[in-house]
Image (cartoon, rainbow, N blue to C red; front, side, top):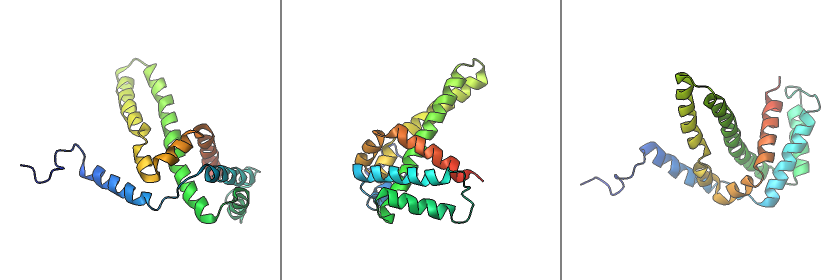
Length: 169
């Protein structure tokens, strides 16, 4: 007889703990609404508009000014912006990575050598893992994921711009 009625589940201890942590963190997540998402998009666009004017993010006050302009444009309080931006980074980063991996997989599938075939197999496995949005849904709620899915292209484009703006030196 097994030690626990859950021993038969095909879930690693780490996965089970990760799922429990995500559900616990879900209580701290902001419940994303359409109005919040629109405000977060306005925040990011205003933030980026300031940084993309040619200012380097390392210039004194560039990030502070961009943040203040973003807050004003968003119409949201700081806490909602910070929690929302964390959610958007997780979601958009996930989707950006999946897109890059799909592109790489297509390149590998056009090659016929054994090494490319092996790499393509690994890329398919990784793509299946990345495309699973269930961990994000546990962390932020399925409603938030559904809402962000409606704006996926725009959010990934903003994410890409934000990464370029913030890593520019």
